Length: 121
Image 1 (spheres, one colour):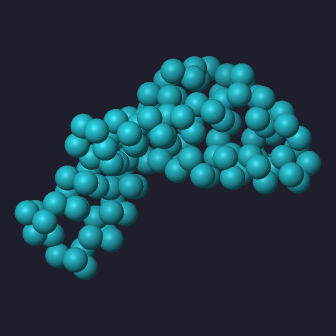
Image 2 (cartoon, rainbow, N blue to C red):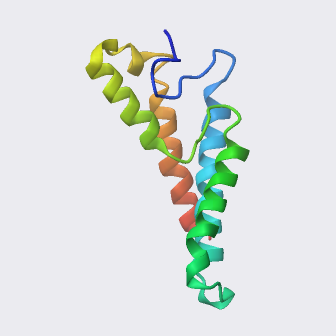
């Protein structure tokens, strides 16, 4: 399978699903906690015009730090949308069955990490 032509994260065979699951859920947990604690708390007194810049810096930093295994783990739409598009263009269903249905790992890890972040922050 040629991953250079498919715009979806496809793991290397040395990457195991637990490591990718951990980095994706951890990225969402950090993103949710930092967003809620830093930007949404009115006691921090961050100027309104600096909030988009801080939001971008937080998202970029977490994507770079947690993206060692798969690329950017913070956006599951980049994975799932790319796979749907590539399968409709002609790559078939092997994108969804590759590496034992790996696309489910990123979707479920994103949901679980966001839920943990909401609960603990």
